[in-house]
Length: 107
Image 1 (tube, rainbow, N blue to C red):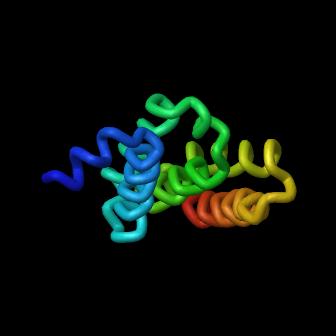
Image 2 (image 1 turned 60 degrees about the vertical axis):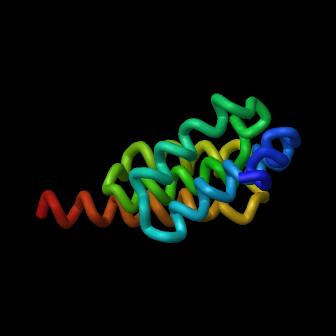
């Protein structure tokens, strides 16, 4: 409990802990909880609104939850805003998989 109290006194550490919790939920397969935490981070920390890592984590949660269109929009945003970022190609891959999935559902 005293460790948590120390964390409260250091906003940077609290911020980092919140990010780690959200990404940890994603890694552990708790996608709905991860989505909720990742969506809340930019409201708590304005500088995370354009964080490609947070957007990518949210997109991964959405993909896992079957919300492909919303994930595709987010990945396209990463690709547009951060064309040289390592996650940029993920949007193209996701859109290709989404198109293939839609083709199978129609055919």
